[in-house]
Image 1 (cartoon, rainbow, N blue to C red):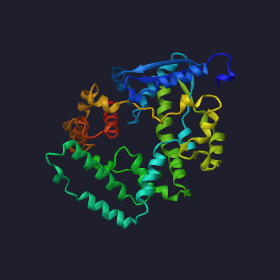
Image 2: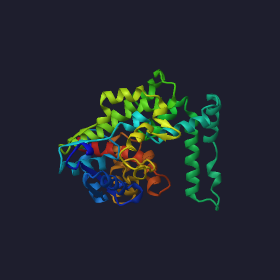
Image 3: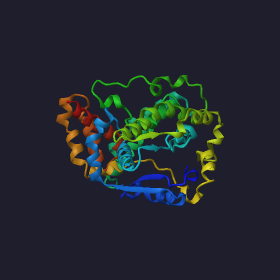
Image 4: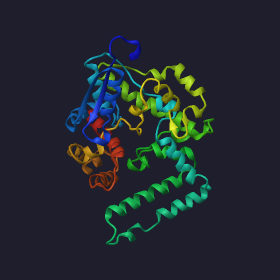
Length: 354
């Protein structure tokens, strides 16, 4: 795009003061190499707090992908300079880019060979282990909780009937959402009931397709479209041109994942324009340190929405289970940011509906 223009392309990026989440320096280096007119802002917890009250009205539903915050902020930044933006969404789903693909595949290869009856029996055994017997003076409560959590996770993995069940567990914000709600149950979806009908034997292709028809349209595209429209910024997704999608699915998997490298063919194209040293880094999602903020500047806001009396009065969530989830997060026994953010976004949306 820059090569075809006489004027610099406008590019925009969000940065965070928390180093583990910050990619702004890398984005700036690529922008400098390409010669774009680059603008960046660093997001603070205070700016996040200013956005959160707008989220329920902006999305008009309990939308709970925490990257909605930086997405809105970068859209707001871009709208100060342009009216139309381009996004690279779709590349991971079309070309096998997500980290969870090899991780889920390796996990299934480790346990999936065992007969289901054997896995179920081992899961039941793990769940009956007397974890409280480990509370010796030499073992901290934090280590005990870590052990218990990993054991529970292993039991959940062993309990799935097939690979599709494992992947559903892998991408879920809640391991058992029906238990967290009062009288609630999951609706029938492609992920929960119909994945068996897919005629895709390769497990990586199954994951990519499931993401393409669920996660991409129901999360990623909703997030980008409503964030952009919230500030009157139009967002276009070139990789989702139907010709690109059709071509991508016509390619063999070896053109997308090769020798452990994901999005292989896209990287070959990118090598023509950007030095490998500028872009060869571990994949990072467009996340925010929401877990840290919930223990800090967002604690009071979250604590009010999750108060047991409030939950009991509203009648949607199990107050005891939610409080247990919240307390474990606040005391750093566990990182429950994803599960809590889903509940908090529902609570915030519910507040606007009164």
